[in-house]
Length: 149
Image (cartoon, rainbow, N blue to C red; front, side, top):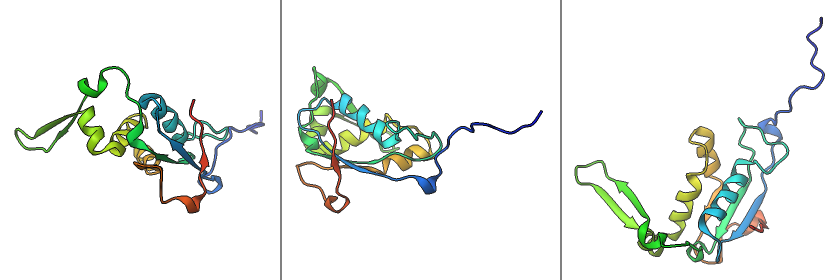
């Protein structure tokens, strides 16, 4: 019996991948729903050539991050924590405070939480570019507008 493989499983080689650029307007989009779809594109799950061990996702530019919609009472009830590593060094901020100070950081944080926690996931996260306001410095990459349902 020969060990010849008729149809080997397709794997994308990193040399063969091409990255597209998309731009998303976050205005009035619900935070988590936007985030999960952006995460999908960063991972490349939307492509037929998706390969788990290759970073085959696309770049996503998010504009108007400060206009994202947060539903329910999460603005006042949900809290972001950071810890300095020192005793008593735990800082807490409600979503409302966080949004007013660092709206782009909140989006990055939520999307990052939906990516794999591996070297590959960190590579994928670098393809996310979040900006407050409608302008971004990636015009040269000619990002395609991405409609998020």
